Length: 227
Image (cartoon, rainbow, N blue to C red; front, side, top):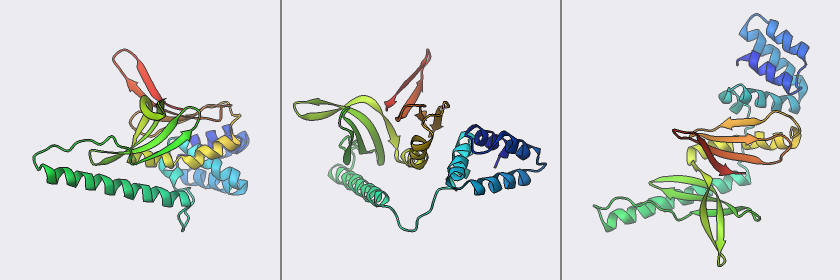
């Protein structure tokens, strides 16, 4: 652990005092600095635990932050449903691919735009989460839909996750929930890059999560996504 930047973020989040931060900086070895931080965090209870996770993320030490995730021997209901949905989508994609190959061995595989599942995230803005098999992979869409004659149609407003990137986003959910509950009034914006130019950000004083994909053009930077 790179203790000095972590200690700085812990001090900014009021987990430790300025005096304790200086004590950490005065330690002569990395081992002693890390041991000092951990001994202080253990005295702070849950607040210190979540503060250390947040400080590690801010310091770009995501791998260490993941080690602090709680490990439950029994999967939650959410994890069970997610596993079931993944297995359904993979099975469906494989079956469809086999049907294409058996009907025409020379034909190129066709991409599927048919959602394997569709979950309404917001009744007011018609925001949906869908999982779509695409060229042998599973793509997770968070997308705004338009309505016509009682039917919903996807718009271009939204963001797309390959499954590995979606799983990385899932790793942030506990941290996001804890921040929204306990640190909403802080002035500093929280932001994570989860790959592919996709950023997750939390804006102070607003109980929303922004997911944006930044696209660099020759002239300027564009962004798209959902809130």
